[in-house]
Image 1 (cartoon, rainbow, N blue to C red):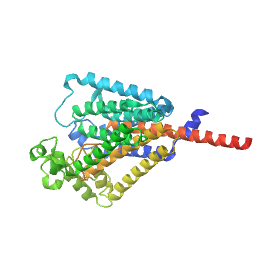
Image 2: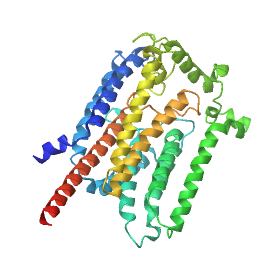
Image 3: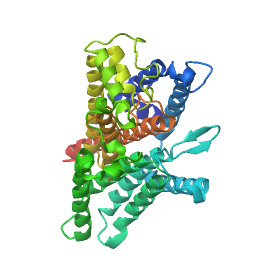
Image 4: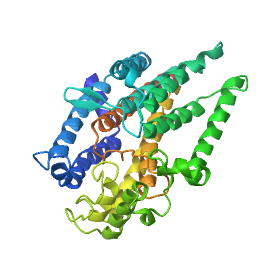
Length: 399
Protein backbone atom coordinates (compact mmCIF):
# COMPACT_ATOMS: atom_id res chain seq x y z
CA UNK A 1 0.00 0.00 0.00
CA UNK A 2 2.88 2.34 0.84
CA UNK A 3 4.63 1.64 -2.49
CA UNK A 4 1.48 2.43 -4.44
CA UNK A 5 0.95 5.66 -2.48
CA UNK A 6 4.49 6.82 -3.32
CA UNK A 7 3.92 6.39 -7.04
CA UNK A 8 0.45 7.87 -6.73
CA UNK A 9 1.90 11.00 -5.13
CA UNK A 10 4.35 11.70 -7.94
CA UNK A 11 4.24 15.16 -9.47
CA UNK A 12 2.40 14.13 -12.65
CA UNK A 13 3.07 17.25 -14.78
CA UNK A 14 6.79 17.08 -13.99
CA UNK A 15 6.87 13.34 -14.75
CA UNK A 16 5.09 13.77 -18.10
CA UNK A 17 7.33 16.65 -19.17
CA UNK A 18 10.45 14.71 -18.13
CA UNK A 19 9.42 11.76 -20.31
CA UNK A 20 8.42 13.98 -23.24
CA UNK A 21 11.70 15.90 -23.21
CA UNK A 22 13.88 12.83 -22.62
CA UNK A 23 12.32 10.55 -25.25
CA UNK A 24 11.54 13.36 -27.68
CA UNK A 25 15.09 14.63 -27.23
CA UNK A 26 16.47 11.22 -28.19
CA UNK A 27 14.64 11.35 -31.53
CA UNK A 28 15.86 14.91 -32.14
CA UNK A 29 19.39 13.68 -31.44
CA UNK A 30 18.84 10.90 -34.00
CA UNK A 31 17.83 13.45 -36.61
CA UNK A 32 20.73 15.81 -35.85
CA UNK A 33 23.41 13.08 -35.63
CA UNK A 34 22.41 10.72 -38.45
CA UNK A 35 24.92 12.27 -40.88
CA UNK A 36 27.84 13.07 -38.57
CA UNK A 37 27.69 9.71 -36.77
CA UNK A 38 28.79 7.98 -39.97
CA UNK A 39 30.86 10.61 -41.79
CA UNK A 40 32.60 12.22 -38.80
CA UNK A 41 32.63 9.62 -36.03
CA UNK A 42 32.99 6.61 -38.34
CA UNK A 43 30.25 4.48 -36.80
CA UNK A 44 28.52 1.70 -38.73
CA UNK A 45 25.04 3.09 -38.26
CA UNK A 46 23.29 6.48 -38.25
CA UNK A 47 21.45 5.31 -35.11
CA UNK A 48 24.62 5.17 -32.99
CA UNK A 49 23.98 8.21 -30.75
CA UNK A 50 20.24 7.57 -30.69
CA UNK A 51 20.69 4.03 -29.38
CA UNK A 52 23.18 5.11 -26.74
CA UNK A 53 20.93 7.95 -25.60
CA UNK A 54 17.95 5.59 -25.27
CA UNK A 55 20.11 3.21 -23.25
CA UNK A 56 21.11 6.01 -20.88
CA UNK A 57 17.49 7.16 -20.55
CA UNK A 58 16.38 3.63 -19.69
CA UNK A 59 19.15 3.25 -17.10
CA UNK A 60 18.36 6.69 -15.67
CA UNK A 61 14.67 5.86 -15.28
CA UNK A 62 15.57 2.62 -13.49
CA UNK A 63 17.83 4.56 -11.11
CA UNK A 64 15.08 7.14 -10.67
CA UNK A 65 12.70 4.44 -9.46
CA UNK A 66 15.25 3.56 -6.76
CA UNK A 67 15.84 7.22 -5.88
CA UNK A 68 12.18 7.94 -5.17
CA UNK A 69 12.24 5.12 -2.61
CA UNK A 70 15.11 6.65 -0.60
CA UNK A 71 14.02 9.02 2.21
CA UNK A 72 15.64 12.46 2.12
CA UNK A 73 17.00 11.87 5.61
CA UNK A 74 19.78 9.80 4.03
CA UNK A 75 20.81 12.50 1.54
CA UNK A 76 23.54 14.08 3.65
CA UNK A 77 25.50 10.88 4.19
CA UNK A 78 24.94 9.50 0.69
CA UNK A 79 25.84 12.74 -1.12
CA UNK A 80 29.00 13.19 0.95
CA UNK A 81 30.08 9.61 0.30
CA UNK A 82 29.42 9.99 -3.45
CA UNK A 83 31.33 13.29 -3.58
CA UNK A 84 34.38 11.86 -1.83
CA UNK A 85 34.26 8.79 -4.10
CA UNK A 86 34.39 10.96 -7.24
CA UNK A 87 37.24 13.00 -5.77
CA UNK A 88 39.17 9.77 -5.25
CA UNK A 89 38.40 8.51 -8.76
CA UNK A 90 39.51 11.77 -10.36
CA UNK A 91 42.76 12.00 -8.43
CA UNK A 92 43.53 8.31 -9.03
CA UNK A 93 42.73 8.49 -12.74
CA UNK A 94 44.67 11.64 -13.55
CA UNK A 95 47.41 11.81 -10.95
CA UNK A 96 50.25 13.99 -12.18
CA UNK A 97 48.59 14.47 -15.58
CA UNK A 98 45.61 16.27 -14.05
CA UNK A 99 46.77 19.68 -15.26
CA UNK A 100 46.06 19.90 -18.97
CA UNK A 101 46.26 22.58 -21.63
CA UNK A 102 43.46 23.77 -23.84
CA UNK A 103 39.71 23.54 -23.42
CA UNK A 104 38.30 20.08 -22.89
CA UNK A 105 36.00 17.93 -20.81
CA UNK A 106 37.30 16.03 -17.80
CA UNK A 107 36.32 12.41 -18.32
CA UNK A 108 36.77 9.03 -16.66
CA UNK A 109 36.83 5.81 -18.68
CA UNK A 110 34.38 3.18 -17.44
CA UNK A 111 33.11 -0.07 -19.01
CA UNK A 112 34.13 0.97 -22.52
CA UNK A 113 32.45 4.37 -22.15
CA UNK A 114 33.20 7.58 -20.31
CA UNK A 115 31.81 9.56 -17.39
CA UNK A 116 31.98 13.32 -16.86
CA UNK A 117 32.52 13.67 -13.11
CA UNK A 118 31.65 17.38 -13.21
CA UNK A 119 28.00 16.57 -13.92
CA UNK A 120 27.74 14.11 -11.04
CA UNK A 121 29.63 16.39 -8.66
CA UNK A 122 27.24 19.26 -9.41
CA UNK A 123 24.21 17.26 -8.26
CA UNK A 124 25.89 15.49 -5.33
CA UNK A 125 27.22 18.78 -3.97
CA UNK A 126 23.81 20.45 -4.43
CA UNK A 127 22.32 17.67 -2.31
CA UNK A 128 25.09 17.89 0.29
CA UNK A 129 24.85 21.68 0.56
CA UNK A 130 21.09 21.45 1.00
CA UNK A 131 21.32 18.69 3.59
CA UNK A 132 24.17 20.35 5.50
CA UNK A 133 22.76 23.86 5.62
CA UNK A 134 19.28 22.52 6.34
CA UNK A 135 20.65 21.35 9.69
CA UNK A 136 23.25 24.08 10.13
CA UNK A 137 20.65 26.85 10.06
CA UNK A 138 19.04 25.43 13.24
CA UNK A 139 22.25 25.03 15.27
CA UNK A 140 23.23 27.86 17.61
CA UNK A 141 26.94 27.17 18.01
CA UNK A 142 28.04 26.94 14.40
CA UNK A 143 31.29 28.94 14.30
CA UNK A 144 33.22 28.06 11.14
CA UNK A 145 31.41 24.83 10.31
CA UNK A 146 29.54 26.57 7.49
CA UNK A 147 32.78 26.39 5.46
CA UNK A 148 32.72 22.57 5.16
CA UNK A 149 30.47 22.41 2.05
CA UNK A 150 32.22 25.44 0.54
CA UNK A 151 35.62 23.78 0.87
CA UNK A 152 34.31 20.65 -0.87
CA UNK A 153 32.84 22.84 -3.62
CA UNK A 154 36.14 24.67 -4.09
CA UNK A 155 38.02 21.38 -4.35
CA UNK A 156 35.58 20.14 -7.00
CA UNK A 157 35.88 23.36 -9.02
CA UNK A 158 39.68 23.26 -8.76
CA UNK A 159 39.91 19.65 -9.96
CA UNK A 160 37.61 20.29 -12.94
CA UNK A 161 39.34 23.57 -13.85
CA UNK A 162 42.82 22.02 -13.68
CA UNK A 163 41.56 19.31 -16.00
CA UNK A 164 40.71 21.97 -18.60
CA UNK A 165 36.91 22.02 -18.39
CA UNK A 166 36.46 25.72 -17.62
CA UNK A 167 32.83 25.81 -18.81
CA UNK A 168 31.74 23.25 -16.21
CA UNK A 169 33.92 24.90 -13.55
CA UNK A 170 32.27 28.28 -14.20
CA UNK A 171 28.76 26.81 -13.95
CA UNK A 172 29.72 25.02 -10.73
CA UNK A 173 30.92 28.29 -9.19
CA UNK A 174 27.67 30.08 -10.11
CA UNK A 175 25.55 27.14 -8.90
CA UNK A 176 27.24 26.80 -5.52
CA UNK A 177 27.30 30.58 -4.98
CA UNK A 178 23.56 30.90 -5.65
CA UNK A 179 22.74 28.07 -3.23
CA UNK A 180 24.96 29.61 -0.53
CA UNK A 181 23.25 32.98 -1.00
CA UNK A 182 19.86 31.30 -0.44
CA UNK A 183 20.89 29.80 2.94
CA UNK A 184 19.10 31.64 5.79
CA UNK A 185 21.37 33.55 8.17
CA UNK A 186 20.86 36.12 10.93
CA UNK A 187 22.63 39.41 11.62
CA UNK A 188 25.01 37.72 14.05
CA UNK A 189 26.47 35.57 11.27
CA UNK A 190 28.76 38.38 10.08
CA UNK A 191 31.25 36.19 8.22
CA UNK A 192 28.45 34.34 6.40
CA UNK A 193 26.76 37.60 5.41
CA UNK A 194 30.03 39.08 4.17
CA UNK A 195 30.66 35.98 2.06
CA UNK A 196 27.15 36.28 0.63
CA UNK A 197 27.83 39.88 -0.37
CA UNK A 198 31.10 38.80 -1.98
CA UNK A 199 29.24 36.03 -3.83
CA UNK A 200 26.61 38.47 -5.16
CA UNK A 201 29.25 40.98 -6.27
CA UNK A 202 31.30 38.18 -7.82
CA UNK A 203 28.33 36.91 -9.82
CA UNK A 204 27.49 40.41 -11.06
CA UNK A 205 31.12 40.99 -12.03
CA UNK A 206 31.22 37.64 -13.83
CA UNK A 207 28.14 38.53 -15.88
CA UNK A 208 29.70 41.89 -16.77
CA UNK A 209 32.96 40.16 -17.68
CA UNK A 210 31.13 37.70 -19.95
CA UNK A 211 29.51 40.60 -21.79
CA UNK A 212 32.49 42.95 -21.89
CA UNK A 213 35.49 40.62 -21.66
CA UNK A 214 36.49 41.27 -25.28
CA UNK A 215 37.00 44.94 -24.38
CA UNK A 216 38.90 44.27 -21.17
CA UNK A 217 41.28 41.46 -22.12
CA UNK A 218 44.48 42.29 -24.04
CA UNK A 219 44.54 41.43 -27.76
CA UNK A 220 47.28 38.83 -27.24
CA UNK A 221 45.11 36.92 -24.79
CA UNK A 222 42.09 37.10 -27.10
CA UNK A 223 44.14 35.51 -29.86
CA UNK A 224 44.77 32.37 -27.78
CA UNK A 225 42.51 29.32 -28.07
CA UNK A 226 41.38 29.60 -24.46
CA UNK A 227 40.29 33.24 -24.48
CA UNK A 228 39.17 33.87 -28.07
CA UNK A 229 35.68 32.69 -27.09
CA UNK A 230 35.23 36.12 -25.46
CA UNK A 231 35.25 37.61 -28.97
CA UNK A 232 31.63 36.70 -29.68
CA UNK A 233 30.21 39.80 -31.34
CA UNK A 234 29.35 39.70 -35.08
CA UNK A 235 30.27 36.00 -35.55
CA UNK A 236 29.57 35.98 -39.29
CA UNK A 237 32.25 38.65 -39.79
CA UNK A 238 34.68 36.08 -38.37
CA UNK A 239 33.33 33.07 -40.25
CA UNK A 240 36.77 31.59 -40.91
CA UNK A 241 37.80 31.94 -37.27
CA UNK A 242 36.94 29.35 -34.62
CA UNK A 243 35.27 32.01 -32.49
CA UNK A 244 32.75 32.83 -35.23
CA UNK A 245 32.30 29.73 -37.39
CA UNK A 246 29.98 27.73 -35.14
CA UNK A 247 27.73 30.58 -34.03
CA UNK A 248 27.42 31.93 -37.58
CA UNK A 249 26.37 28.52 -38.89
CA UNK A 250 23.85 28.40 -36.06
CA UNK A 251 22.45 31.72 -37.28
CA UNK A 252 22.21 30.31 -40.80
CA UNK A 253 20.30 27.26 -39.52
CA UNK A 254 17.82 29.42 -37.59
CA UNK A 255 17.37 31.71 -40.60
CA UNK A 256 16.76 28.70 -42.87
CA UNK A 257 14.04 27.43 -40.55
CA UNK A 258 12.05 30.62 -40.34
CA UNK A 259 8.77 30.52 -38.42
CA UNK A 260 7.54 27.04 -39.41
CA UNK A 261 10.76 25.21 -40.34
CA UNK A 262 11.98 23.47 -43.47
CA UNK A 263 10.63 20.06 -42.41
CA UNK A 264 11.87 17.07 -40.41
CA UNK A 265 15.11 15.73 -41.88
CA UNK A 266 15.47 18.72 -44.22
CA UNK A 267 18.28 20.48 -42.34
CA UNK A 268 21.17 21.64 -44.48
CA UNK A 269 23.47 22.70 -41.66
CA UNK A 270 23.64 19.24 -40.10
CA UNK A 271 25.52 18.08 -43.23
CA UNK A 272 28.81 18.84 -41.48
CA UNK A 273 28.41 22.63 -41.75
CA UNK A 274 27.55 22.93 -38.07
CA UNK A 275 29.94 21.09 -35.73
CA UNK A 276 28.41 19.56 -32.59
CA UNK A 277 25.00 19.55 -34.27
CA UNK A 278 23.75 16.81 -31.91
CA UNK A 279 25.32 18.23 -28.75
CA UNK A 280 25.86 21.91 -27.97
CA UNK A 281 24.30 23.23 -31.19
CA UNK A 282 21.23 21.04 -31.47
CA UNK A 283 18.84 23.96 -30.88
CA UNK A 284 19.61 25.68 -34.24
CA UNK A 285 19.07 22.34 -36.03
CA UNK A 286 15.71 21.93 -34.29
CA UNK A 287 14.64 25.44 -35.31
CA UNK A 288 15.89 24.89 -38.87
CA UNK A 289 13.69 21.82 -39.30
CA UNK A 290 10.72 22.54 -37.03
CA UNK A 291 10.67 26.32 -36.99
CA UNK A 292 10.91 29.20 -34.58
CA UNK A 293 7.47 28.47 -33.11
CA UNK A 294 8.63 25.00 -32.04
CA UNK A 295 11.78 26.55 -30.55
CA UNK A 296 9.64 28.93 -28.51
CA UNK A 297 7.50 25.97 -27.41
CA UNK A 298 10.62 24.17 -26.18
CA UNK A 299 11.68 27.22 -24.16
CA UNK A 300 8.14 27.50 -22.78
CA UNK A 301 8.31 23.87 -21.67
CA UNK A 302 11.60 24.56 -19.89
CA UNK A 303 10.03 27.49 -18.08
CA UNK A 304 7.14 25.31 -16.90
CA UNK A 305 9.53 22.59 -15.69
CA UNK A 306 11.44 25.21 -13.70
CA UNK A 307 8.17 26.53 -12.30
CA UNK A 308 7.22 23.03 -11.12
CA UNK A 309 10.61 22.50 -9.46
CA UNK A 310 10.58 25.85 -7.65
CA UNK A 311 6.97 25.25 -6.61
CA UNK A 312 8.03 22.00 -4.92
CA UNK A 313 10.84 23.96 -3.24
CA UNK A 314 8.40 26.52 -1.81
CA UNK A 315 5.96 23.85 -0.60
CA UNK A 316 8.48 21.88 1.44
CA UNK A 317 8.33 21.60 5.22
CA UNK A 318 12.10 21.15 5.57
CA UNK A 319 14.77 23.73 4.78
CA UNK A 320 17.02 20.91 3.53
CA UNK A 321 14.55 19.83 0.86
CA UNK A 322 13.80 23.40 -0.13
CA UNK A 323 17.48 24.16 -0.72
CA UNK A 324 17.98 20.94 -2.69
CA UNK A 325 15.02 21.64 -4.98
CA UNK A 326 16.14 25.22 -5.41
CA UNK A 327 19.65 24.04 -6.29
CA UNK A 328 18.38 21.53 -8.86
CA UNK A 329 16.23 24.25 -10.42
CA UNK A 330 19.23 26.58 -10.65
CA UNK A 331 21.32 23.70 -12.08
CA UNK A 332 18.79 23.27 -14.89
CA UNK A 333 18.34 27.02 -15.41
CA UNK A 334 22.09 27.68 -15.73
CA UNK A 335 22.48 25.02 -18.43
CA UNK A 336 19.53 26.37 -20.40
CA UNK A 337 20.68 29.97 -20.09
CA UNK A 338 24.36 29.38 -20.90
CA UNK A 339 23.64 27.06 -23.86
CA UNK A 340 20.97 29.18 -25.55
CA UNK A 341 22.72 32.50 -24.93
CA UNK A 342 25.99 31.07 -26.23
CA UNK A 343 24.36 29.60 -29.34
CA UNK A 344 22.52 32.88 -30.02
CA UNK A 345 25.70 34.93 -29.57
CA UNK A 346 24.47 36.81 -26.49
CA UNK A 347 27.38 35.60 -24.33
CA UNK A 348 30.64 33.77 -25.15
CA UNK A 349 30.28 30.15 -26.22
CA UNK A 350 31.14 27.67 -23.44
CA UNK A 351 30.19 24.25 -24.82
CA UNK A 352 27.44 23.53 -22.29
CA UNK A 353 24.78 20.95 -23.29
CA UNK A 354 21.09 21.82 -23.57
CA UNK A 355 19.02 19.80 -21.04
CA UNK A 356 17.45 16.62 -22.51
CA UNK A 357 18.03 17.69 -26.12
CA UNK A 358 21.83 17.55 -26.34
CA UNK A 359 23.51 14.17 -26.59
CA UNK A 360 25.47 13.28 -23.46
CA UNK A 361 25.19 10.27 -21.20
CA UNK A 362 26.50 11.78 -17.95
CA UNK A 363 24.44 14.95 -18.21
CA UNK A 364 21.29 13.07 -19.24
CA UNK A 365 21.65 10.64 -16.34
CA UNK A 366 22.30 13.29 -13.70
CA UNK A 367 19.47 15.45 -15.03
CA UNK A 368 16.83 12.70 -14.93
CA UNK A 369 18.05 11.45 -11.54
CA UNK A 370 18.05 14.97 -10.09
CA UNK A 371 14.42 15.35 -11.16
CA UNK A 372 13.75 12.04 -9.39
CA UNK A 373 15.13 13.70 -6.24
CA UNK A 374 12.59 16.50 -6.76
CA UNK A 375 9.89 13.82 -7.09
CA UNK A 376 10.98 12.23 -3.82
CA UNK A 377 10.78 15.58 -2.06
CA UNK A 378 7.34 16.18 -3.58
CA UNK A 379 6.17 12.78 -2.27
CA UNK A 380 7.34 13.69 1.24
CA UNK A 381 5.64 17.08 0.93
CA UNK A 382 2.32 15.44 0.08
CA UNK A 383 2.72 12.92 2.89
CA UNK A 384 3.55 15.60 5.45
CA UNK A 385 0.66 17.77 4.28
CA UNK A 386 -1.77 14.86 4.65
CA UNK A 387 -0.44 14.04 8.12
CA UNK A 388 -0.86 17.63 9.25
CA UNK A 389 -4.40 17.79 7.90
CA UNK A 390 -5.29 14.57 9.75
CA UNK A 391 -3.83 15.96 12.99
CA UNK A 392 -5.84 19.16 12.59
CA UNK A 393 -9.04 17.17 12.09
CA UNK A 394 -8.31 15.01 15.15
CA UNK A 395 -7.49 18.05 17.30
CA UNK A 396 -10.66 19.84 16.20
CA UNK A 397 -12.75 16.78 17.06
CA UNK A 398 -11.22 16.66 20.55
CA UNK A 399 -12.10 20.30 21.09
